[in-house]
Length: 116
Length: 116
DNA sequence: CTAACGTATCAGTGGATAATGATATGATGA
DNA sequence: TCATCATATCATTATCCACTGATACGTTAG
Image 1 (spheres, chains in turn blue, orange, cyan, green):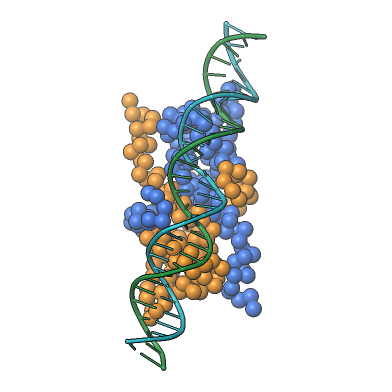
Image 2 (cartoon, rainbow over the protein chains, first blue to last red; image 1 turned 90 degrees about the vertical axis):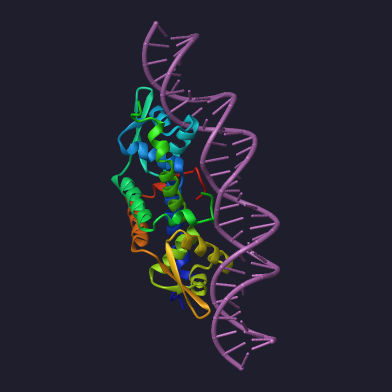
């Protein structure tokens, strides 16, 4: 009676939410640009602002998001705050995504459900 | 003069958009549920509707999105349409995400930038 | 041909969220 | 303490997108 209907998926609904939240966290060009900037190493907010061309409040907001998500970590250095990737797997996940993009060609471009 | 400022990132802006689009495609619980249903094998739309508890038009919309993105493929069988994962790497990417989630604890939960 | 079924599309709606400007907090140096 | 700099927060706005119900399209059976 609970072979493969919605029951099992309802139980796994939290896991789906969590996964979705992670992917959504990575699903923003600004945050990806920030993470890219951090792949090269530790950076403070101003440097990230310079690297990405984003506004400072915007960067801070995204960094807070990434920090809460556990994707980056931070340490204070005087009045600077230096951020870095929290885990090697973050960079790995992004690289795997690039591989998948290479495999699917530019198929993603064709998706018209949401804006390019 | 073009050491590490916005220039390089601007050139890579398209790549960022593409990656972001892929992650956003995966950043929805409904689409993840659909992909989960397809991990076990090929399914038609009705079966997916049953597995996920989503509405049929909703499922069709998401499937179109996933199809356009090249994440799933389809084949007609009479009046049924059977969908399957387009690439092993899709499942791999999801599994890598789960690993990262395990590594970061449930940190993602803490991110308050967007709704749980 | 017509009815029934499976799937896809369309328009409308509500909710979520990224970006911005103004401002607050915190730290350093004179 | 006061001025300055680095970072964080807040409120606003405009946009985007997931879901729903109605409906169209395509296929098969009688």
